[in-house]
Amino acid sequence: MAVTTGKLTSERVRGLVWVCDIQDSTKYLNNDEKVDLFEDYIARFYYISSQIANAANATMYKWTGDGFIAWFDCDLDRNAGKLAASLCEAAWQLSFLNNVTQLGLSFKSPIKLRNGITYEKDGLHIMIENPVGEQTSDYVGRDVVLAFRISGISVDFPSIITTWEIVNRVKDYPLDYLRFEKLEISEEQIDRYFKGEKRLAKSLFGTSAKIKESRYRSTENVIKELVNTKTKIQNIAPSEFASKYHSIFTNGPGWAKVVGDKLIEFIKHELYGNFEELFKTTYINKKIT
Image (cartoon, helix red, strand yellow):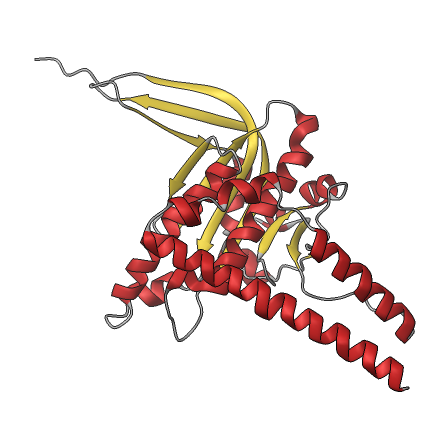
């Protein structure tokens, strides 16, 4: 009897790619004392990351064993900058949530994430239908592969590596909390991450925690900046994206609420609290002098 293999179709697509990788996952999976806790983390990570990707309007989200790939359709090239800015925010939110809460679990060495974001202009969307009508699909392309390659490289929080084109396109959007700097890729890294393909290592940028130093800033200017920043923090409204994904803390499983509470506690008492202390100390020192 003949066996129907189903249909295979493909189409050309344009979109942005977000690949997220869990750093040092092999170290945990190969350790009998750590693997059970890490498997709990993986399950929670899959849940949280899928919700965040969906909140950012992912067209496709797939697990990759120790991370995920998400695809975001970009029908018009002129919309790529706005979409890229949204993905950078999503990657920041996921990394921040992960670093602060460890998804409600306790590890001796904190688990960190790495993110690769690229713009695939000549992608191929392949769809395969099995004999019972179920369909699976995937995306292929040079920048899809590049997103996987660069997601293996560690940089400063929130550990996002991307291309010059995306950095140039997102500069017109309010991403003051992100600073990118050009990466100098070594020969060893080219061999390790790019299989010797030097062209893939060109014009890559990563997030940086370095602060641009000014030649001189008076105490008055520092206090003025702190006042302005304090006002911004007090008046900040959650973005549409953040509002969408924060619902997982109330509508998700029990552990998700614990994670949400821990995040809020950190923001109120450590992040904002430390800022308040810095402001008071700077102001008092100025009054004394």
